[in-house]
Image (cartoon, rainbow, N blue to C red; front, side, top):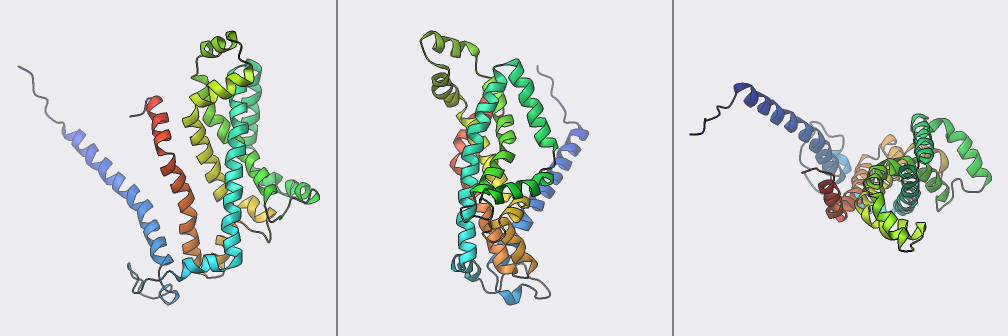
Length: 279
């Protein structure tokens, strides 16, 4: 006969405390999002009403309409998307090359980690003014396309992409590359046709992280784009000057691209996690 295992009171208490803590964490994330969504569809008169209500008395989409009606906001949305996509693609590409070189050579690994550590430890805002002067001299500061800002965001995001992809490239057996090399494949062909497809899940993860980093970045966007602004500075100005309704709608809109990316690449991300041993 099998001996029955009696549940320990301590385990039940720990499980209960874990459930309570999880509830607080979920509530801490959900309540602000709900209030943001509620404010984005509430009329301006209800913004500062007292006592505040949990539900809007009369829902309106005027704040969302204002985002696309105001030229500055509409251009800010398009500009932020272009900068974030360009940053995600460029940083992921350069980060993949850097991560691969770090996994295939001792000197490359040491130099790569030293560079990444130095970049991550250096406060980026300390080089903001010199970068602004250089981009201004090149005619890339405050441009309508914001490609100067995209270049800065790419430089900031490359360490994130490289560190994300390093473990994925390390997991690729060297014997696979040696077999392809024996069959006549060049190093570039091996990298593009064998290595990159094997780490596509990590590539998707790196792209999402770099996209979100650029999409949310405030300091360089505020300094380098004084008139042709992206969304984070616009959200700041609208909040400071009391345009709470449009600011709430704009903040809610800023959540959508990141959520859409995660949903679209969800299967790839799940495959990556499963192959890494997460269940």
